[in-house]
Length: 265
Image (cartoon, rainbow, N blue to C red; front, side):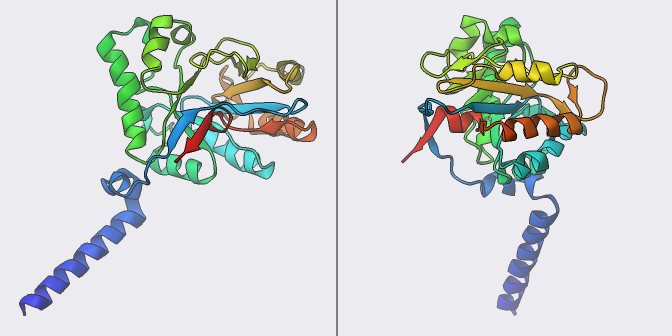
């Protein structure tokens, strides 16, 4: 009888665990307990061919609407980096942990965008530790390497004190200084980029791409992919046209980790 009771208990626990996995796996301790091991990455930028035109696409903040970009990216065989604010995952307008797992499973890169999206250039040492280290730890507890950081505000990336703190935890960080990123001598803790906002015309977009070849790569960053009128909103239709332009004009699309990091054993 005791054995039957034990078997029944084990069976009930298995059923319970299976239910948790199916219903709410990503928001239970199981998500961290069974997370994959973190790969060992080092800073080692790729060596593009002389005539290769490399573009990187980044989505800041983890807006829920940015999920709609994934089918478009996949239709062209593109990948992108999604920068996550780890304390926003319970907010309805932002991606949750299940969304983030689906983003990664779709071949996208997961980066840290800080713990709570504060201006690091106006933060104390303790606040910077919380924003940089804790956000990285949270992402790593779920199996994401999180060696890439994206600054929440432009002034943060331009602050050398902040850069020195970012360098303690991350291998590379994207800033908001506009321009091409030269792989041969870029500041890896304040990578140049172009913001693609609501009012960016197709002419503006093509100008961003001018000069993209070899070591000169272009990083484009987005926020929302929706029909809103906010500065940070880009419609799905516009995004589709922009990605079509990249595809038809022979651009190679890689995420930040693919460009700057290498996995070693």
